[in-house]
Length: 261
Image (tube, rainbow, N blue to C red; front, side, top):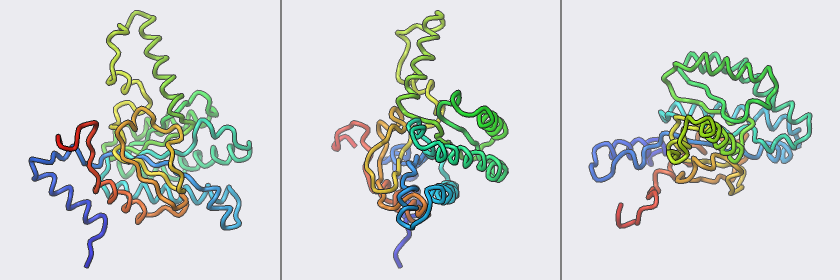
């Protein structure tokens, strides 16, 4: 009887924990980030509205969060609304805003009871005031939780994040509180929205598209990518585990030569 992706994943994790020649930190899967793409095309293919596609996309996100717990991840990041998404029709943007409101109303209580820490990354200042309040409340309510962290990238863009981070560092330098010569990679990383989160080990994108779309540009420097042909509303545990299995079959070199590994 063949083993499942989860069994193979567990087997490799155990093997690494006892193999001095293959440190666990090189392949341990801590953080998975997902570009949730294809809601509209999924709906169009089924003769449904784009709104229905987005609602089914929320169900797929709930499935992904459950698998993250099963895999004992420390972080999962879901790309749900980009800074470029403001260019969509007003009715669609408002629907996406309402989906975030509904998340706080329906899902936050359960996630909090499970010990999940919730963080929203992205530019909050341009969000509606009621959503800003919901975001602050959700983070405050779950701040002390020691389960895995669910990061929702909402009104997020990698370039925008870098601009805001550099702006904060520049302001500190101008005020005399920071020596510009002291700025290094670690300081920039800490200034990003993701803060103390580890960089993503694995980034998954659905819908068959093979691009990063302004997502975690700094943090993805050495991430492994898996591109899936399924649209996001169809994404399920099997898809997630197949991506994990691909990740576990790769060698992460971080710039080193193969013979140095």
